Image 1 (spheres, helix red, strand yellow):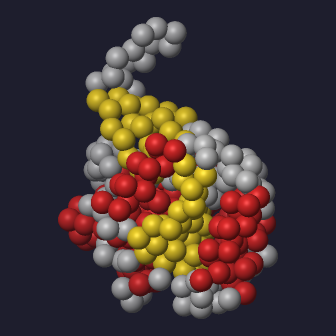
Image 2: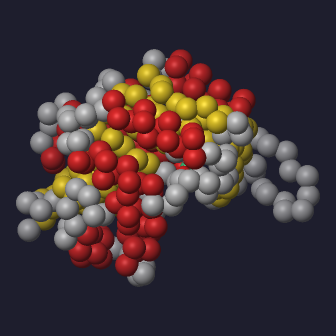
Length: 304
Ligand SMILES: Nc1ncnc2c1ncn2[C@@H]1O[C@H](COP(=O)(O)OP(=O)(O)O)[C@@H](O)[C@H]1O
Ligand SMILES: O=P(O)(O)OC[C@H]1O[C@](O)(COP(=O)(O)O)[C@@H](O)[C@@H]1O
């Protein structure tokens, strides 16, 4: 069973405005709402790829209900804990460029947290725990460290998709998969990474930790997969980007789905890239037929 943890879910409010006039009244051309948050996106794309999974975390208020209802409509099992304040609404502004405003998230009490930690005890060896996205400021910022330690001690595979400050406390535990984008990898080492070559050099330094698979995505410029045994580079499919929100989360889902299907590391990487691109080329998250169409469009090179 794959279990996704989204400590800070969101309603992603996608707003299209032709030309944004700051300080004036603007009217939208188009709007859409999606259940979001990184683990939740992973869950939705796994479901699209026919991989049963459970989405967990904290939800609250009308916006939290929207998130849970959206997942239930797609047949995804959910085990969220209810909190008093509403789930955040993240603004994804499309004005030719993509501007994002992500909320801080609701307050979560110590009791809520201990109930949540208790609820995770039901998962065991053979399960995969996906820890993805930001941690609300009311929770300890080293929580992924605690969750990773508890889970790996029981034999779960641990996947983390989060910024440096949240990932770092978990690096003392064995990790199965991480997927920084090139900006996040650069942030990790205090450098700017703008080439595949640099992504490989710095990504390989992370292999000194106990991490089985490291994927570095570079949006339209390609991706890299590094393991202790082999390294690969992918050329991503060409297409028109419609909405890249959730593309990274889709790559995570694609890789995990590939491994669940028993694919080789190379083919799981191919599925991961096709799934990320299928989301980037869609209004919402990737659909199965678009993923299938893009699989043969991904070129993988084994690196020496
Ligand atoms: N312009 C693009 N063209 C093709 N694929 C894209 C593009 N942008 C994103 N993707 C796909 O989405 C994946 C993740 O994108 P990226 O922007 O690097 O991640 P994140 O959303 O975590 O920042 C890429 O590996 C690729 O498969
Ligand atoms: O928890 P964070 O870091 O604020 O990110 C949440 C946002 O990330 C998303 O999950 C999208 O993430 P990616 O574009 O990196 O895949 C949105 O759905 C959500 O609004």
